[in-house]
Image (cartoon, rainbow, N blue to C red; front, side, top):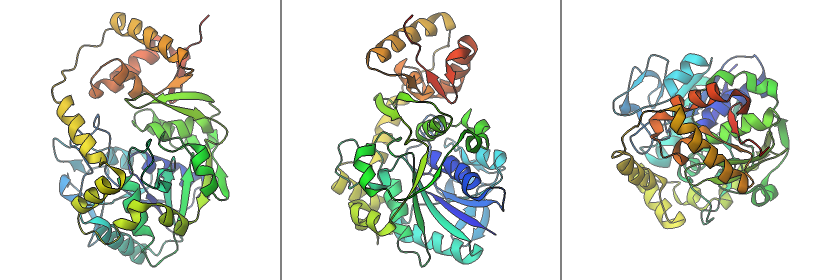
Length: 364
């Protein structure tokens, strides 16, 4: 028996897909997780998603789809979390290559469906920005989700759209999403998170980290991203909702516009027109800025007082938790230093580690 789970936005959605498989299907046969190789710049300094041409050691599944095994490697200077995920999780990670637009992604999905004849097909998005219209002022990353949605609705197979952790990506609020959300198919628990707990120790996804934290019972307000967006950690956080696929397509203007695109450049052009931006442009600009930033030596005597000031400011904003990515950027450190900073903080103040988030201390 094969389950196919499509990680709508790549990155942390692939980790959440592994958690979802364990939660919904238990210890039955491994899943095939179709995902973009699209990581934060602190992992992959090259803007945009990686395609098959950016890896060595891929394993061909069908003419248009390859798996990323543990032995695969991104071609420098690119980076990717997928080989490490393949090494640490029991699933097959199939590479979703977006460079031939929605037509190419649709073809990849159709080939996988034909090859595996999966028992089920789930399209998973953490946070719910796959339900965006495209004009929301808080929207940051619509392109990947819209592309997978455009492909999923054209496949001659039954695809179930699932949204986990409504609002946890900090892009659309739970209030905006609630009217679109259908049946709760599962509420994630600490036991579900246990399957991916080791991955959460190093994977940089913020939305999936907050999904896991809420499943473990963490509540409050978490500040994320370089902009310091506040995200509410509530009882809604660990819920996984089914959403009507056709309604999602009707709502998502970008997904409808890119149905017949045959190149990623075309998808980007539509995103600029409909949403006012392309997140790959944002990555290009940020990558150019980061290129000139030199890592500095992390010294606890310097970092901890800076952390104290950040926490004091965060408390004044009502923040109870944050991510290590947010701390790294708030302290003006290079993204490559995130893991070193994380270990320094956990070693120095273990009582504040609310895995996988960092708890802002209260004033005494």
